[in-house]
Image 1: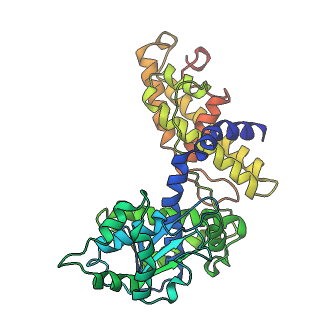
Image 2: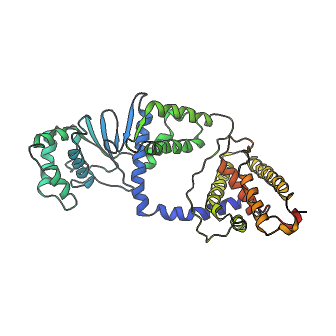
Length: 390
C-alpha cells in the first residue's frame, strides 16, 4: 500500500498544479456543457436527439441552449457579456434557430432584484426589448460590439425580428454547478441498481460516450437517444454482477526522462527505447487501477493481485527459458542476444489476458503494466544473464 500511495502522490502532483490554472477553469466550462447534455440525454425519450455545437451549445427538439458555468458566486449583471454575446449569436443565427420555440441561457449566475432580467421569462418580447433599451444607450466596452450587432437593423433584419427573437429568449439562472450536477446524476433513477461506489465510473463512461460522438461525426455532433439508452443498459450490466468491475483508468502522462525507473532502464538496455512512453503509461495506469481495486475489493483483494503478478511472472520466466535454449555464453551482450530479448518482450506482450480472482475482465494495459512492475521490482530482466544460458 505504501508503494501505491507514493506512486499516486508522485503522478498526481502535476495534475493538481494544472487543476488550479486558468486553463482548467476554461476547460471546466466545456466539460460542464457535456454534463448538462448528459442530463438532457438521461431525461429524453427513445426517438429524441440531443445536439451539441450544432444549434448552440446544446439543442433538444424544442430548445437551443447556451451554457455558462462560473466556479464561484456570480451575478448576471445588466451588462453581462454572458447575456449579450448569447443574444448576438441568436441574432446572427436567427434563420438556423427559427425551428426552436425556446432560446435558453442556462447559467450558474444569479439575477439580482434590481436587474433588468428579473422576472424575464414572464415578459413579452416587446417588454424585453424595452428593458434592454436602458443598456443599449450606454453599453460598456465589454459588450459594445455585441450591442452594435444586435441593433444593426436593415431591410433583412428589423426591430420586429429582434422582438420575435426576444419572445423566445429565456434565462435559467442559479443553475447547478458542475459538482452539483454530477451529484444529481449519481442519484438518477437509472442508477438505482448500481452500487454507489461504481456510479462515478459509470458517469465517466457516459461522459466519454458523449465526447466520442464528436469524433465519430465531426460535422454533426449528435446523441441519438435510442442508441444512448441501449448503450447505457448494456454497460450497466457489468456493474450488476457479483464480480467487481475492472476500473479502467485513463491516464495521459508523459515520460520526461527525469524519473528513474528500473523497468525503463531495462527496456533501453535491449534497444527498446521506442517502447518507453507506452510502457510508462501502462505502468502508471496499472498501478492506479490496483489502488482502485484495493479500495473496492474485500480484504482478499491484495492477495488476488499478488497471485495475478506471481502467475504472470511464472509465464514470463517460462518464455525466457524457452528463448534461452538457442543462446550460448558467447552470445551474451551481442546483437543476437539483444534480438532474443526483443522477441521475448513482444512474446510476453501478446500473452492471453489473465484473470484476477473476483474481478471482471481486465484491460490489456493492466497486464502490460504489471509486466513492467515485475521488472521494476527487480524480479525479472529482459537481458539474458550468464546463469540463464548454456
